[in-house]
Amino acid sequence: MKEEKNVKVTNGYVALSVLGVFLLTMILGIALFKNPFFLGLLVVILFIAPGFFTVNPNGSKVLVLFGAYKGTVRENGFHWANPFYSKQRISLRARNFDSERVKVNDKVGNPILINVIAVWRVRDTFKAAFEVDKYEEFVRVQTDAAVRKLAGSYPYDNFDDERAELTLRSGMDEVNDALENEITERLAMAGIEVMEARIGYLAYAPEIASAMLKRQQAVAIVAARKKIVEGAVGMVEDALEQLSRDNIIEFDDDKKASMVSNLMVVLCGDKEVIPVVNTGSLN
Image 1: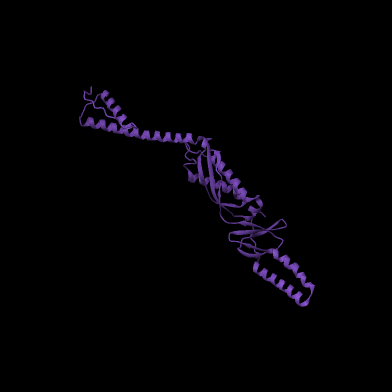
Image 2: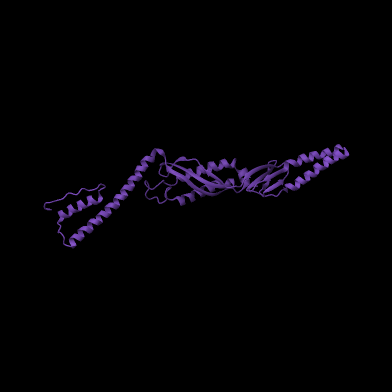
């Protein structure tokens, strides 16, 4: 037996009625006939009584008789089964798992902090009860292992590997799908269904966070400067072309170089330019 087997057991209210009949018979037999034989019914009553149990909504009871798995009761309500059955309660409700933040190395070796949020539930009660020891602890350990493996499979970003199209920071949908598949594969042997898994927290480790922040700022500044220079060059080209087309002034190479230099300083400088009025000749 490697899979769950659903079984039906006796309705608890029917068994309770039978127990009431035995109890009433014993009391009346002793009271009316003064016959100690009716005390034998007490043994039957004591045998029946431990067999009662309840199953709550989204709950189950795993029945085992002297080490042999007999089945799982999933039907909600009040039931009675063989009193010699041991009854292990296993919840079938969906549960959240918010892992601790762990420090791992990404694909390029940068230390990062990461945690995962997973939603899971028991799908196969036999596997959860007998294939692993303490399935809830198994979920925790295997989820942490999956997170560590995932973090080592992708770079945090593409600063160190510009050819990396998929990173932990930018490819969240694909990374979360890969994480869910990895956790599902690991927990399948315990009969656990993973309903959702996603990265809940992602950041550089504190020892390199400051340096990486400066790095990101530098990249942003360089990108902004590049745009500014591209725009400034276009504006200078337009200005020289319009001045030449309208015959406002004739430029030789030295004048063009001087004008281009001045315009680039004005357009690309990060401080306000103070104009200087030239009252003499441009030569």
